[in-house]
Image 1 (cartoon, one colour):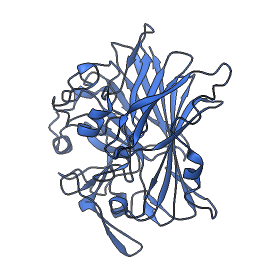
Image 2 (tube, rainbow, N blue to C red; image 1 turned 90 degrees about the horizontal axis):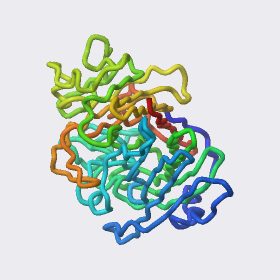
Image 3 (cartoon, rainbow, N blue to C red; image 1 turned 180 degrees about the vertical axis):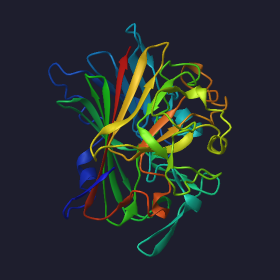
Image 4 (cartoon, rainbow, N blue to C red; image 1 turned 60 degrees about the vertical axis):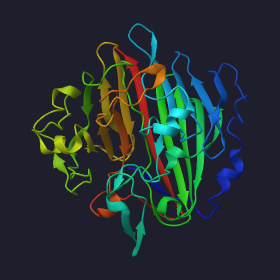
Length: 383
């Protein structure tokens, strides 16, 4: 789960005074370090310039991320023959992300996932959020963190090449209290890992639940029904017809939600089960079985034809497994691929949906003087 640590008294805006421009450190190339590149990637609706940062490691793994939404635009990893392929869905240009993106590759916030009826009460005060998913608030609202331009810095570290995105969310933005200073970093290591680290502070008490919303397809084409998934979760949070958790933690044993042993995603995705019908497949939060509060295994995803494997570890208590049920063939993405239903899947490490309205769920409340910290690591290899 995210760590809330005493931060002492310091100005929330300090990060942004130091942040500089998006490509400020790109020319600081350390001897022997893997290359980094920064280039223009268009103009956001706000009129702000958007930049695209490319990180590459010693094995040819390439991550490209842009300052609009801190979005991972592409992630190229080798298959069993050594040939690299892009394993995330998205677009070739900024225009697609602006006009019609279902959160492809984005950092979502201030609250990832759903809050029932766009309302919560905090310290006796009621707050109303923008409703953008049926009756509920989803992924931060009408203009969440996925639709703003972040500043960015790059650096070579002992772990690998790193880009850090920063954004200041103003008090009252999308209905949330407090000015929130947020940073999200992606570090590409020579162990073929993408390390994602989130840090945030606030000047007023606020709910916070950040996650990364990449859609994976380890084959780089087709659907994900043949991908084999293992989840380190023996419980999940059942939902109502609007995908809001009931508040119970139900056992996965004996249900289509049991991925404690490997199963092909398509094996039970159309099972005659109420929760499958509510989600149109899988669109549920899984409660991770974790030994402590550090990095713990969340998921292992395998694709047989390419041999590619993705392992996910996280400090978060849950992971939302979404099987791309709402993709419907109306979006044409990278390389003119038409994204049909279940062309990609998401493994969103997170706190649980609607936690501000569920006292029994792990808390998502961040208070002044505390520091929010969360980490997730994606590790890739080929068998």
